[in-house]
Length: 262
Image (cartoon, rainbow, N blue to C red):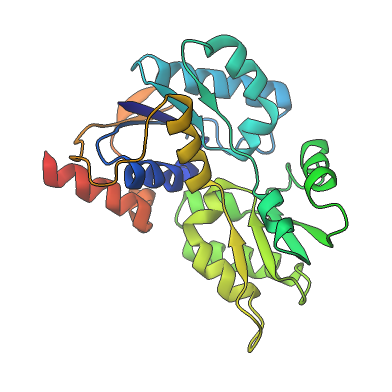
């Protein structure tokens, strides 16, 4: 079994780690686009063009499924990706976990990139799944870029700025960018009021990994013999994981597991 994941950058790490938890025997192809990231400020057409290049590079390795581990690409490029690659290669998009967050009651906040915040796509999800639930859209200026470069000071500043835009009575935060899952605990700490009930965070990595297995008719097998195959593509070039990936537990876990079995 081989699962490919694509993103503008290292935001694909949480979903890759989730795939490995469900199926340690899955070979992984991680295809990202450091030459073109961040994708958020690009036009929808440019995002689609970059996403197609990254997806094609992954598809050359003949995976069984492709996870679009990027909210921005899922918003703008998913139809084009599916039109080109399916049915031969199932393409699984990433949707912000607004539905389960709203089902738990409110108020909720949706942290996302400025390009996604207020977008018709996100507004449709809120209207469909959070009707009657107080929902605040929070633009997280610079957070994905800071995480991509593992810039600790910039991450702290971006998280603090987004937390300041988040109402004090919020009881759940939807992480609407896959990069944000890399610092979920820091986001919780920044938003959690002292003495308040525990804040719920809703992310997408586990759900999208499970959906990828369902699409190819595979069952979770967390005790399976681990695979040592990890292919990393940076704007189509074969490479090692970027140094910044090792700043996060998901990246270190992938690297350690591969090195231990090499």
